[in-house]
Image 1 (cartoon, rainbow, N blue to C red):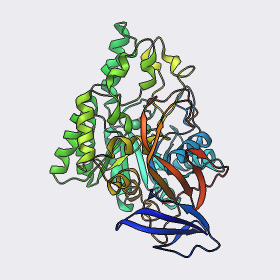
Image 2 (tube, protein in one colour):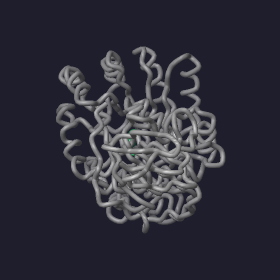
Image 3 (tube, helix red, strand yellow):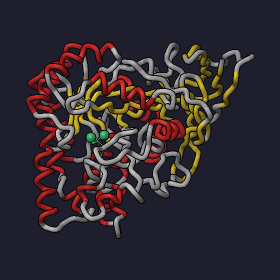
Length: 449
Ligand code: URP
Ligand code: ZN
Ligand code: ZN
């Protein structure tokens, strides 16, 4: 048995000065002054104790058609636990012409035995047909209840009529569909124009994916959701325009879940104007936006309009992978690292305005609820899984590529002065990281939902 003593627990019922006991992977008791004889004692004096943080949007060991992400499940989940994340939802992606069950099996194989944190899979549907529809029952039985569809990327996207059918097909079992909201046809046309006009530099990445491209796609998703009688989930929201569209749909009475990411709350499009090829580090889709967009999204986080903050971690090395697009920005692999730093970035940046309960909701509880894991995950409660983070709110440290565990040669947050750090991180009751360094154990398990 392990007992976390003297901490302030962030529980569903509020903040609680109490001890927490864990045994056999579960939380077994929460009360002040628990008897600790024979138990491993963990001192949480001066610390907050949270349910493990949950990153609802990661891409590990992903092949983008040209190359593999820098992080696989071994390095990515090592980085995750060092930062306090104990569960990720990664994306299993159906091959065109392939089956959903094959995709799930392939992703489980990538993660099994090497993952230091727990892992669940959203299923990205790229080939919607009668065979795919017929697999949904088996997929549900295998523990997958959340799905993803793309409005952009030619190799991944589905048509509007297909998206409507997917929404209708997952409705009977309470599935949820997250959608990458960018108008792919418009992006393609703008990219063709830019390249034909000799505009090949990094700064053209955001110019060919303007805010309207996101807002239009979110609007389309919301109307399709209304036609299907389904809630929808907007992933990686990046613009004030898109936020306004979500507000309008909510005013109509629709349920629209909104996810954003640290990069859209902390960084802006000026990064694309950095000298040389430096801007390539920030090539992701959707792109970084204007300071006004950043401010609007930050307000939305503060006033409760954003449901979850995930990373969209999708890492490519600067030196030899981002370099692929040196002469043509459309060839720069899309995505940036973040899985290790999300909790520290958000505590540092919102710690003055949001309390520990609100941060817990944004970083753990809301995603657990949305993706069918609550209260097994996302709650400090007797019977819940023993995924526990002892958080030192006063720790001061600096984020650098040199001290990170993400297997990539840069971080978008180089030099960020962080306040707050995961002191002890338990995955299924086993110590997975301490003071930002991993233990030797791989305690992560597949989370069937
Ligand atoms: O640029 C990004 N975000 N790459 C990852 C795939 C996606 O769109 O989520
Ligand atoms: Zn996406
Ligand atoms: Zn993504």
